[in-house]
Image (cartoon, rainbow over all chains, first blue to last red; front, top):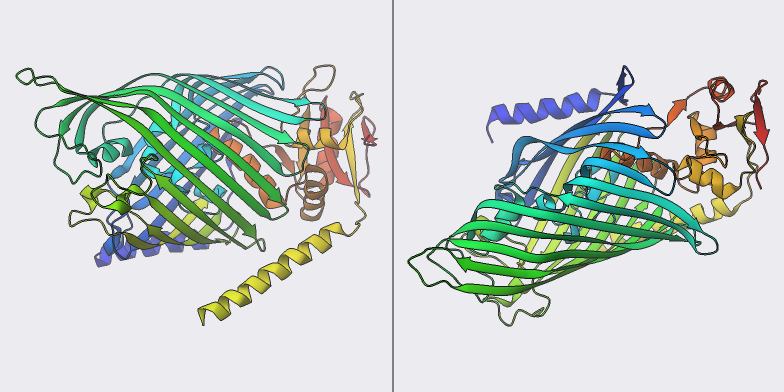
Length: 404
Length: 147
């Protein structure tokens, strides 16, 4: 990092620190909110999501949204979002969400446009650092899956209702389609399997969410499901594959068939303490077909059985300080949790312990520091670690966010 | 050294949690009254209040729209949110910020002065708010007693 970059970051932090509480702008009944955040990551062994071994500032995001209420039951809005995390995002501006929302009654409403996907408890707010304790959400929300489960185009039917003696329910049913960019995190995930994605073609996407609020104060539990197919064309690259399949040579057609992401969750809030646990299952068939006409067609059908779970606890000590921790496990192939078929057994899991401190300097400005201890290489990218993946990694994260 | 620091912070956290449990279980007089526009005829329960201020209940029984307004004067705001909505002020703010940043809702209307809240409720059909007990309520606004 040269002196100019140091000065750049110094001025950025100085600017944020001298700004007092900021509030939303309103012009002609159009409300504008936004945030900007800058982080720093450093790890002791493996590179994780970026070039973290040497320490990196390639870890920022920003968003701005506009919304207007035309009637108490009808509003429209959109949010532009930009981020950079390692090789993903590169601060390209994208439409994060944009839709019209008509709430007919409490029990039924409609949204039309690009809508955030309700995957688990926190997917819809995964990009909004100041709304949570942690810098990195657990691997149920793993960063590279953002492009796949962030948002979709379509229609959302939603509502809430009460059932006597049982409690309250909230539901969402989304139907539509989604788009995955070629340079998305998903492409990077496929790179680790030795495939260089040329283009994506995703068709119908469906999603459901049901949350139950039983008559126990502070408790909510429920589940979400996402259902879709992915078709892609890919070229083969040579990487140390963590799977027993090793293909090389011809170009491929790649299909994720009957892809399902199911998450079950429970969250309990007791005053300033929030306990949460989620269990996620990825299921589907990865079908790989060779395309080169001069070669005999080879078809691989690889069942996907990926599981992940975490347990977390956060506790707000004062208006200024909050702390939290989680323990999370991710298995890329849950039928082989001990890595018997992997080149190195520790590539079969990713076990992560995180501890975070969050400081609310004022309503607009937060600073967080977070420590991660990672055992396993299941989520380490071979392309980021060309000299091989170590079993254990420790990582320190810092992040400053300003919102209005 | 690390284990000593760990023990110290663990004791600190346990004491903090204990203090919070004791402090919230003590009986406080709630110096707040709930006010509505004069056209609101519904009987309202504490659960309704919670659902209204969380944006889950948006209609009165005659299908007219509920319009709630927040008094952000710190002490009243914090007391109301803790006792009626059963969230901390921090959790409640984040609840609405989540709606704003996912597009699923708009920030509630907020006033820092109780006379502005009373005025809003007075001129807005279906409106509801909360003010301190000593706040003067004008004609066209009525105080309600919860079921």
